[in-house]
Amino acid sequence: MTSLKADIDLVQCPVCMKDFTKNNIEIHVNKCIFLNTQSENSCKRPGSPNENIPLTQIKRVKKAKVEMSSSSATNDGDNSQNQNVNKRKKDYNDNKDIPLAEFMRPSLLEDIIGHRESFGPGSMLHSILSKKKIPNMILWGPPGCGKTSIANVIANVCKEQSNLRFLKLSATMSGINDVKEVVKVAKNEAQFKRHTVLFMDEIHRFNKLQQDSFLPHVENGTITLIGATTENPSFSLNNALLSRCRVIVLDKLTVDDVTKILERAVEKNNLVMVDDGEKITLENNTTKCLIERASLKWLAEMSDGDARIALGALELAIASHEKSAASTTPVITLQNLKDGIKRTHMLYDRKGEEHYNVISAIQKSIRASDDNAALYWTTRALHGGEDPLYIARRLIRTACEDIGLGNPNAIVEAVACLEGCKHIGMPECDVLLAQCAVRLARAPKSTEVYHAMKRVQRSLRETKGPLPPVPLVLRNAPTKLMKDLGYAEGYNTRNRDSSGFGYMPEGLENVNFFNEETILKSELL
Image (cartoon, rainbow, N blue to C red; front, side, top):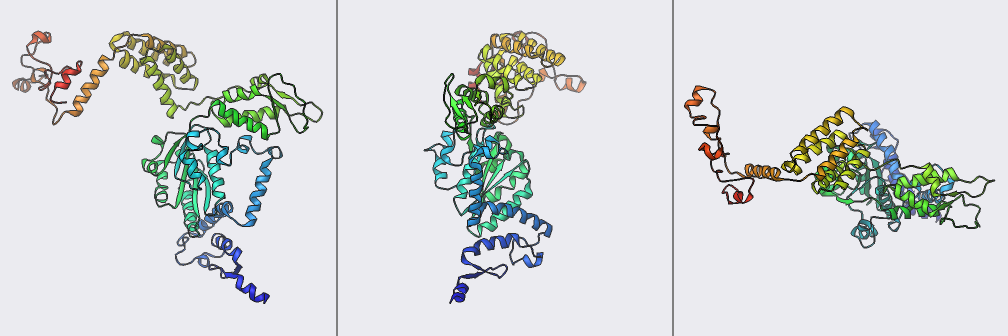
């Protein structure tokens, strides 16, 4: 009876024809497909996705599949392994190799700090993720705002579902071949009703051709794509890919958000937070040090909305103030942090969107005659490493576009500023740019020429048919034939009111581009 019962519970593997129990057959089939080490001919089946693929490539694919399948397995052995990993990560102090920023990554939707409009309670994405559904999305935000942390939350959502698999790649270390391998595995997993969610970090590092490799698989649902980028997707990603994914804009974390993250790190790191001058008696000898609340506030302010910078600074402060066995519990004061940690960065990308945002702020501050703002944005651009010659060139443009005839000397001063920057360079030329920006902001403004030019351009664009020819009297006549044709006949150098002829082309005699009313009356516009 025992032997008969065992035969009933056994199921034959369709790949290797071996018998396994019902509880283990599905796990074995996965491993049998991906880990079969027999020869190329023996591991093929009719219609197998590995047909016509070189054996060396199959082995490489199998290696990747081993790593990916290990993250999605649902048997008891894998669950116990995940529990061991979580157990190791519970106490940050037991594993100094894990950076504090990595240790503090949230695992639940409720643990996300900031981004309330996108992922907070009541938002559409919060509702979708709560239902264990993952949409295609592009996470766009500055460094340290939580893009990878949100991906970590989505990874945990996938772990809770046996029909979801989460994979992570980075565009800095991957290429099209890696994407193709992921797609192959995703198609195989789809046969067992498991859907693949691919997180592609730094997706803007892929060129437009590489990004095209995602399109068919995202469109037909083979994979769900989650991309993370610090660059503006409008410039760095394909329009076709953007149309298939929802762009989630993540702003910088506020000071309050970063402070909450630091307070949570203090709580999980066996620290005690005290107010200035507060005296407390420690009942727990495991406390490594005390930290003043003002210290956390200062760290949050100096991080410029980057939680990774703030946590890294806190980690350095903890490491430098940990007590020894014979010493008393030290206190991390605000002055300790100011002496040991300086502001070492500022978010400014000379080739990214911030480059254009700041230079636009300079010109618009000058246009509004706000000398204080013009000085601030010019100095901030220089502080962020902007090319001083680029700023000087934009000041020349501003001198013509926004000041114009209001102060004709403005263009002379702007060009002189550019020449001065070329001669002395940074850091000496910073005062030249600051002075020029303030001078332009205080100068009287006239946009008469600029707007008249725009009206002429609009007239040229909207003219129907061929453009009107140049009047004969205005044409040059260097040859006898041209003179015989009437070129320059009757031309004189008198003023237009007494010369006896018009200087505008036929049909535009009564149009004055400095007066918009005459343009509206023209039949050409």
